Length: 125
Image (cartoon, rainbow, N blue to C red; front, side, top):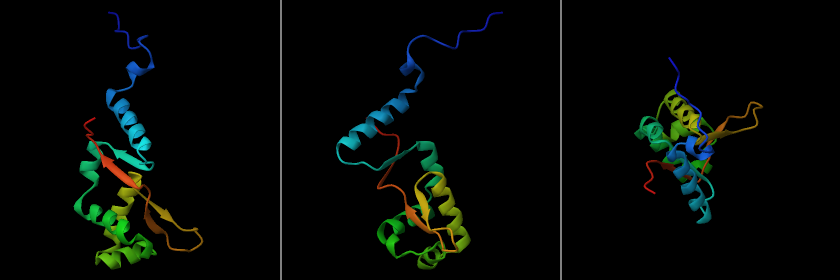
C-alpha cells in the first residue's frame, strides 16, 4: 500500500493557510494607515480569554494604567480579589496583551498594556 504524497512542489505560499496570508495582508494595510502596534488574536483565543472581568482589566489599564503601581493596586482600584486579578492578568499576558514593568529588585511589577490595538478575527477582508 503506497502512502499519499504530502509534499507538493506548488511553492511556499500553497502551504501557508489562507487565513494567515489574509492576516498578514490586513496587518500590512493597517500599518500603512498608521496603526503600527496591532495584535490580531485568533477568534478561538479571543472567545475563551476575553471574559468580562478581563475586558474590565484591559479597559481600566487603558484609561488609568499610569496610576497603577502594582497588581495589588489594580485589584484594590477595581474592588476585586488580588488572586483573581493576578490570574486574569496572567491569561492576558499569555496572549501578549499585557506585560509587566519592574526592575525585579523587589519592586512590584506593574501591569501595562503591550499593544495600542487588539483585534479579534474574523476580519472580513
